Picture 1 (cartoon, rainbow, N blue to C red):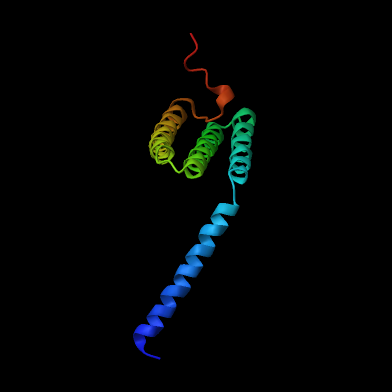
Picture 2 (cartoon, one colour):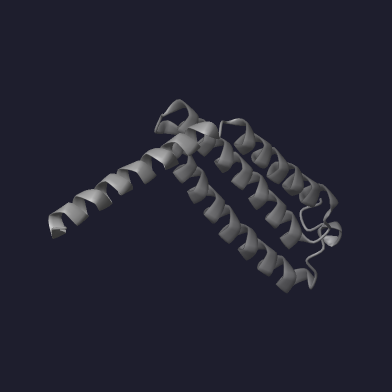
Length: 126
């Protein structure tokens, strides 16, 4: 067998593998992504409502934002639109900014109050 015939066979196998992966992607619909997103959002909401530690609350908010990102990407893939991906990039930028500012505020409050418990933070009360 000549080298170019080997390459042609590898190319045919590569196309077959790619076609199989594309077919498998079509088999997975929108529902598993939405279920995953709902579970992640519920875990984040549970973390926000039950935690007293401000870092735990911030982590819950991060989980909720990631659930939104999963939804955006799933709907963008389902509708074959790029707009969901663009919104996801903006949402990731907002999430990173929120995490940085939130942790800066937590560090500042810890320096002032010597605690990061949300119940003990009444700095803004009049």
